[in-house]
Image 1 (cartoon, rainbow, N blue to C red):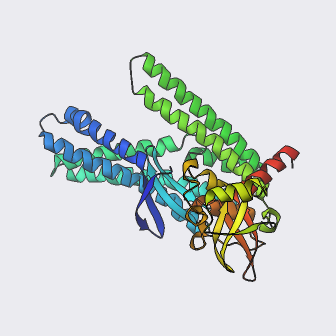
Image 2 (spheres, rainbow, N blue to C red):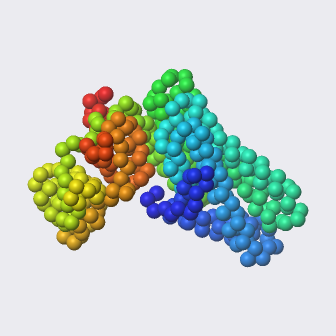
Image 3 (cartoon, rainbow, N blue to C red):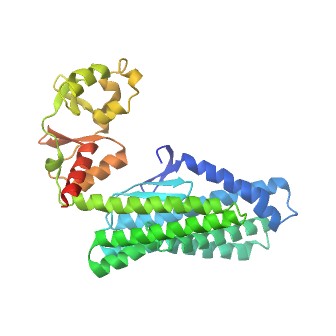
Length: 371
C-alpha cells in the first residue's frame, strides 16, 4: 500500500485511502446498483439503484473504519502508538507501533474489532426494523449493512492469523506457553491452512461455473501472505529485543556536501571508498543523510543531473534517536515514516547513523548464527 491519500484524522489517528480502495468501491457499487438491489426491489427507478448503491458502499467502508478504529483505540489505551488506518481493497488495516506486550492485551485488542462489527450489525438491523416502513430504499440498505457487518465479524473470527480470530488463537497459545514466538508460529501455520482452504474452495467454485471463486482465491492468497509476514515480523522483533541503537549504528560515516552530483557520490565515495551512508553538511550545519538506498531509488539516467541534496533525507524529516533507544522502536519508526536512515544524537552531536539495511543485516546475522 505505497500509494495512499490522507483524508482526515480521527482521535489523533491519520485516516488514509489506498489506491486499491477505489477499485473495490466502484465494483461494489456497480454490483449493488445493477444486480443486488434490482433483484430485491425490481420496481425502483434506475437512478435510485445507483444512489442507494453509493450510499451503501460508503456506509460499508465506514463500518470497516469503525472496526479498525476499535482495534486502534484499544491499542492506544494499552500504550501503543497508532500511526494510521488505511482503507484498501480487502477492507482496512491499522498500522500500530508494535505487538502487544501481554496475552490479555492481544486478546482484548483482537476481540474488540468483531465486537464493534456485531454492534454495528445490531444497530443497522434496528434501523432497518424501524425505518423500512417509512423508506424502503433506506431499509434495504440498512438490512444489507446489517448482514455485511455480521459476516465481517464472523469471518474475522476465523482462526487465521493475522485476522482477529488468529490473534485470539495466538493470545491463548501465548498465555498457555509463555512463548510469543512459538504462539505466532502455530497461529501463522493455522492461518496458512485457512488460506489454502479458501484457495481450494475458490478453485472448486470456479470449476462449478461460479466466477465468484476468484474472490476467494484472492482473499486466500492475501491471507497466506499476511500470515507469513506476521510470523516474520515477530521473528524480527525477537531478534531486536534488548538491542540498542549504539549496537546498530555506524560510527565511520563520511561527511559530504549536498551540492555534489549523485554520479560523483557513486564514483568517488560509494565505489572508491566503499561506504554506504553519508552525513550531508553545509559547513558545520547538518542538512540531511544520504545512503545507498537513496541512490538505488534514483533512476540511473538522472545521476549526472541530480545533486545529493535532491535525493537525501532532509534534516526536518529525520527521526533522531539516542544511543540507548530500542532497536524495535527504531525499525518501526523507519518503516512508519518510510525513511531509510536515522542519525544517532548524543548531547546535540551526531555520533552515528543507522540505515534500515544495517538493521536487516544484523537480523540476518543473528539468524545465521541461530541466536
